[in-house]
Length: 77
Image 1 (cartoon, helix red, strand yellow):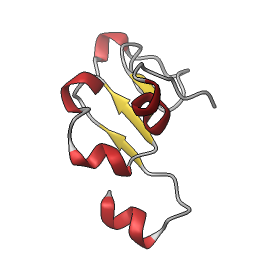
Image 2 (cartoon, rainbow, N blue to C red; image 1 turned 180 degrees about the horizontal axis):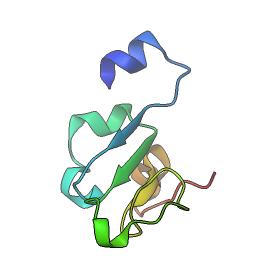
Image 3 (tube, rainbow, N blue to C red; image 1 turned 180 degrees about the vertical axis):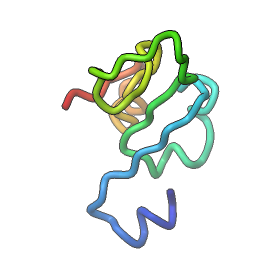
């Protein structure tokens, strides 16, 4: 993510992870992300109508805003 940010500073950097935001919020990589899709994909919660995520338990999070305000800010496309 750091290299991507350096090489393409105007691109939006996304990370898909099976971890929750709280589990990884202290990692260095978070400083270089714009959007995080957190939570484990759960086939039983699959919903093809969802944008940017595969299952209803996952969240699409605006990382800089979330880190700044100290609470989860969801991405709104």
